[in-house]
Image (cartoon, rainbow, N blue to C red):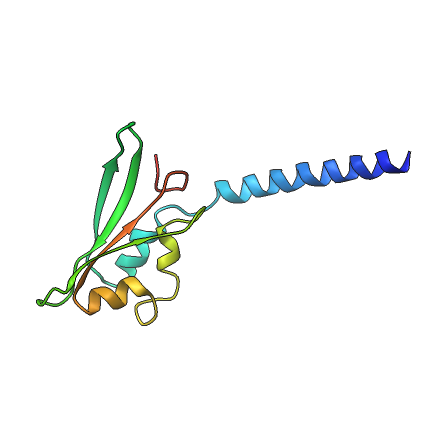
Length: 118
């Protein structure tokens, strides 16, 4: 009887965890990437890329801020993340801003399965 009681409690805890996690995920603030870029007065272009199977992905471009352009940089987040991860600390520390300030054309990509993929 004890092992079954433990298993039942564990199962209930797992269900509760999933419900709470689902509620948190559904309240995640979308469009954080464009709002963070605009907040710091950087130019922004939003582009939608359609994959060969019809999936839509949002990508963001921060154009180089100086006349001398040094090239193009694509920053791609890791698994389960989004382009938001590149913009958490502000212009003095975040790589996209530093690169744009240095004359690079910065693109922030997104994978499928986050708030920027449709």
